[in-house]
Image (cartoon, rainbow, N blue to C red; front, side, top):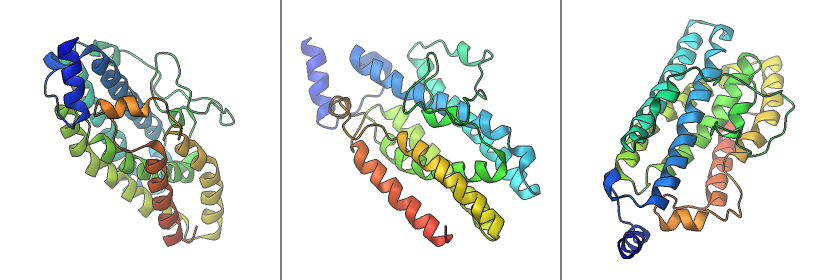
Length: 250
């Protein structure tokens, strides 16, 4: 108990951990939850976006969609490798899992996680065609930029380094989406379809930031696994979305 409390105090003052051997049980549990959510979300995002490759309107768009599909799976694999360092059975991710499975379009699950699947709730909703996929990619990509800046500060140093390496690649995914959305918004029909998709996806992506009155935040902050409250992260995302859409006259 004394050792564990000293580690807690160390983490609360900004300390870093570097190997599974000196990680307290409670810290390990929260770290596993964080990594599982990221891995499952990336695998679900990759699987969902793979289905849109053939909907892309041209070669460049197909390449962009394929690139996003590949790189999200790679990001999942990189974090999964760290989970393996903690003795997690990574073989289950090699088995067939319905990462492409989606709920009905009109489902409303809030921030609920499904049993055995830690993906963010937004990745349970289906994409409907190319415009819808681009809009979702832009909104979630801007959210990922904010979230990865937060994750890049986690107190488990090997994981923080992976998140910092992943961040610019995920940012490029968002940039590719914005380029595609600019083309879509160039026509009256495209703009109308984009705005309908924005109305659908915006509240669902926002849900991924969690409750603004989260009871877990202070506990995670003391462990060095969180630094900024959900409300601040969500506000930063909302400002980025507003600026992006204004530039596109949406």
